[in-house]
Amino acid sequence: MKRLPVSRPALLALALAATPAAAASSRSGAPVLAGAAALPAFVDRVFADGLEPAPAGAAVAVYTDRAAFLAALAPGYAEHDFAEIAPGPGQPIEYTDGSAGYHYVIFTGLFPRYTLYNGPGFVSTDRIGDPVSVATSLFDPPITAIGARVWPSDFFLQPAAGSIVITVLMQDGTTGATETVTQAAPDTFRGFVSAGGAPIAAIFVDAVQADPPDPGESPDRWPTLDDLVVGSAR
Image (cartoon, rainbow, N blue to C red):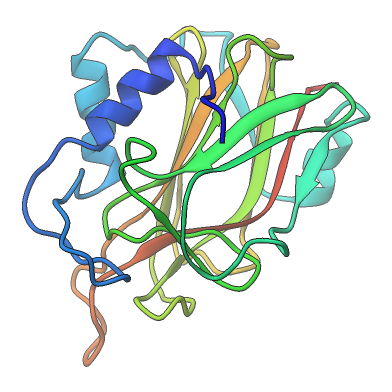
């Protein structure tokens, strides 16, 4: 797999997300170090390093309906249902497709140090606390719209009660949107379209750990993503 030239803000965010902390759980059973415990804390650390929220007028529109999101895109967007992805541990997934040749990679942590851990036809992570990340290419046709179905899953890759936090990072280093989805389920959709046409550098999808968990259940939650769409705003 060739190296993807992701933008500097995205690389900074990825490095911060992979900062070691306490011991963490992994689906593969491999001994690992923890990254950020939850995405909101990770975002705080990004802001402390010089990245600021997007200025007025440069926001990203958030869509909860997939049909409305697709209607806001220009023709030639790319879709992935991940049917070709083998379940279990996996390396970053790289695509170049769509009529414009959009170039992007799906990974977790600071790739390729940490692995994804995928289910049948969907993407998730090995280490608890890691986000599913989708980063765009700096030098290829700009991506100004990204959407997907997102939900939390448990250790066994089954849907679990909980919340999802999605952060959209722009290529100029600002944060275009931060969306919290409470009680997300496998049919939960979120789409993001750059209102001013500014390129999106990356999105980070994180699962919030259950606190307190339901009686008899683990608090551990993993972010899960399917039916990814990337493209350009109309």
